[in-house]
Length: 502
Image 1 (cartoon, rainbow, N blue to C red):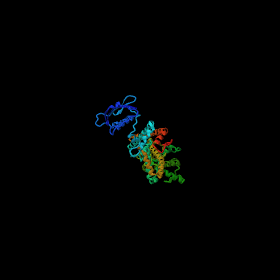
Image 2 (spheres, rainbow, N blue to C red):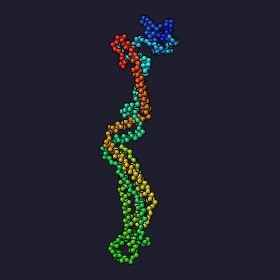
Image 3 (spheres, one colour):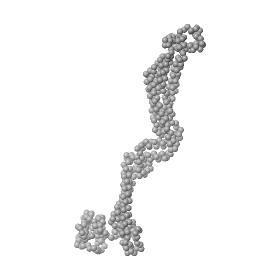
Image 4 (tube, one colour):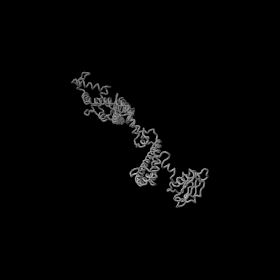
């Protein structure tokens, strides 16, 4: 405890007082004086010494003094304690001042008793350990308020545009989605389909289509056909005779042989002379036999089949079908992914025309000379090979579009049952996810989440501090019960504290 006050300088009424250094302070020391002589200032000095708070002294700095307040006190044991340059060299926690300031802070002020008075008085009852626990708890409460302010500031820093109506906490809690752009595109297509249900329901899907091919093996077989039982010498005589008659000779004589055979007599239908003595007639019979006619019919049929499959309106139908494919893909691509209709129809038409003319030229030549064995030319084979490459591409595209019809069916089903409002909400949330993880927003959300975690950690520490304080209160109040009841009796109070009551 204090032994004496050595120096009071530049504080309130005390300009420079050192005579008090000769006055020892016994266990009971009474100080009395008129009002305005410095009693309150002395109480403020002692309160500052007990708490280490420089404010009670600093706010009483002497007016007009050129130097700051200076105090020197001497405790019973140990060296002198000095207040200089706004601070004590040492505080004496055992010094307690019960004055009007204490009453105002701890008991009442004026006509009312505030919660702060009760709290301070409560802390006085708790003792130093309880006060420490209470202050630690209150510091954590204050820290949580700081977290709340920081969270509000960080939430305000996150742009509201693009959140999709979500709060900052909900927005920052969104999880990343690797294929967000694809998901947004798919959702937008589904929404577009739901908004256009009538058109979707009646729109057609893709029809199959294939280009006709060339049966080169059959053409090669036909080109190589002849009449194996026919004597080539006889053929040469007949052909030599036909060449001397002129254009259309073969058809004229073939018709004549049919008339002779149908009449049942070997009589010339032109001159009515007997034909039995003509050596050419026997050759004619072999040359214009049924096998020969069958060969000619096969050649004629092959040409007709070629024209039917590759000529006339067939190329135009192909062009028209491709246009339909393009139009339908343009419509359905708004709602789903579809293969491109990347066909070069002009190149296909050229290759098709070249291959058809090459094969038809060979068949026409065979028709002119049915008994001549011919081979497929390299030019015709190359032309057909080029066309086959295009034809396979068309077949593959047709197969892909047929497979896409399954996706189109799904689009139709989704359009029929889709809720535009719900789909729009889904898109807004997907866009919020994209905005949440954009380069400019991610750091802001990370800062918000870090502050939120820090607040959660502080709240956990606050809960533990509250538990420690409650445990201490539960144990400390019973120890004061006797003393409290004693003073309640002295003050004439009509109540007493019992264990388990506050």
